[in-house]
Amino acid sequence: AHPTGNPDFAVEQSMPGVVPEKECDPFLMCDEFGPMPSTGAYGNDTDEGFDVPWHPHHGMEILSYIVEGVGRHADSMGNRECYQSPGFQWMSVGSGIEHAEGGGTPAGESTHGFQIWLRMPVANMDDDPRYGTVEPSAIPTVTLEGGVVRVISGSLGGVEGPAQFAVTVQILDVELEPGAEFTYACPSSCDNVMFYGFKGSGVINDETAIGAQRIARFNTSDKTAQGAKVTAGDGGFRMMVFTGKMTKEKYVWHGPFVCANRASLMECFQQHQTGRFPPVRVKWDYKDASKTPK
Image (cartoon, rainbow, N blue to C red):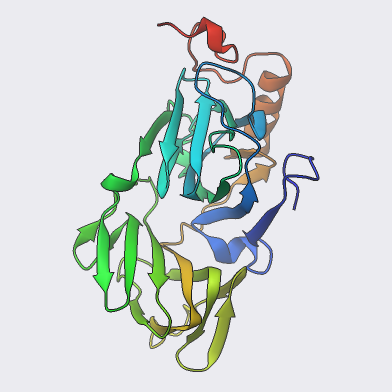
């Protein structure tokens, strides 16, 4: 997929797609971008170099997780920031934000990461937007025999991830050495599980192959099938675990806007077209780095 319209910026969209939209709940979308070589790094004092230029969002929560390279972000709340990998930036979009992304990785080095959109309860869609970043040292890990799990959100073995969302989720980055095993059990608070492979290959429950750019969803209607064993192949295996509690709320989704109903969606488009979006923003021209207060 080419979400920006630029043919040089391609992503692998694991959901929705192979996994239908209703079955992704409480997740909306996951794009994997890269690995791709950077043409150069830009700082927080310039408007140049954004791989994804300024664009709006409404009514969702966003996790941008960088596994290689340096993340870079600017937004309508006045934030301009870079963060190291593996690290992430989160946004609780609510009533709306505009932001631009990319261009933080030094030339010749690789950029690789994910942008994950999550549902936001309809009751929170008019909340003021919030934002934060988490550096690698602040992401807790669980050590396995022959591997490591980075706990991004939710809990694993009593270890709590730093990303907090209005919906119930568990998001893990599981990295296994060749032949290593990871035994997973769905938390009792959740009812939807997806594994997305992005490096190497593995086998689920000694019978189902999974590799890079492949997604597997649990049959969550079967209460006896709430766990799985993953064994890494000869080249090792790395995957994301996306687990959550389905909200089953109705909403209207078009492009970057998720709304409670069609009337709210039309209002978002009208605000954006007339320069009134986002409704909550800083007073200066946030798209001009030189206007940022010192």
